[in-house]
Image 1: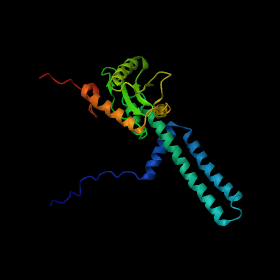
Image 2: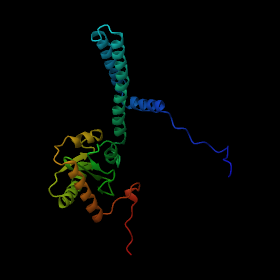
Image 3: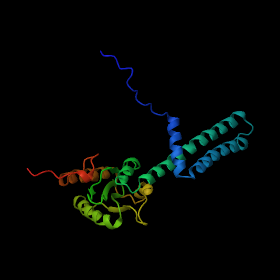
Image 4: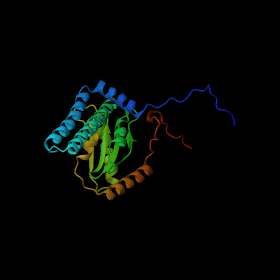
Length: 238
């Protein structure tokens, strides 16, 4: 067997967990000036609560005081981490807001398991890159328009007719994510989808999604993942 060339460059070592968290904190702090103060607040609140409980409730018991203080310290460590994660997620969404495919990224990473969705749009305008995404959950079928409302409204109506043809008894809701003032912000998309009234069971959600997916594939040509929709060419006639 040939010996490995010692002069070949080594693969760069991935940063450790602490370094990654520090990088996330630095990125979040630059974009969200209030994040460090919220983290400090959620460090002090559990720690203070632990100390107060140790003094008031422990009743002079050394073991009880130690346990309350330890619980306060652990809460003081966990609280800022939770705050950092949420603020960092909002910052990340703000950075990709307005870019094609941003809605798909949210559907992939932020929706709960009760939802069935895809990061690929079910309809797209090759000229403007406006897109329509579909998510199926207990509230029914959610159609999300990515782009100005004036351009995506007609696309959503066309897709609603397709959905009603396949599953006529399932509610269909519209959500607009774009530059309009009354549109849903990208960071609030998951919350907006979840606040609708639930009318379907988990089994019905799976059945509706499977039916929509199977019949949509048979009637339309899907956009391959990782391919720029602007560069997709129609197949040549045989």
